[in-house]
Picture 1 (tube, rainbow, N blue to C red):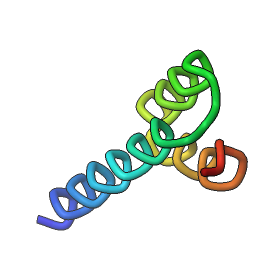
Picture 2 (tube, one colour):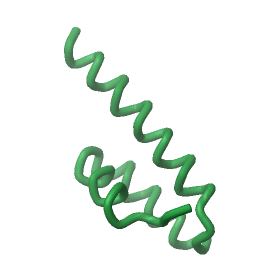
Picture 3 (cartoon, one colour):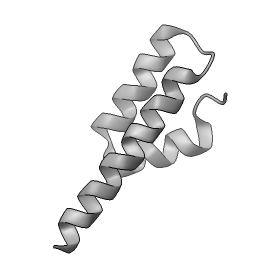
Length: 56
């Protein structure tokens, strides 16, 4: 039960992060790189994106 809630929470945060990445003004290549980082490194990728990712 608790794992399902954490999975859902991660899924929602990842979608929010990806939407913010694609709304940013950086190049398409950087958008794809940040998206891959968020998807391939679930928790660490989100933390890195939050502190160092493209800003709107």
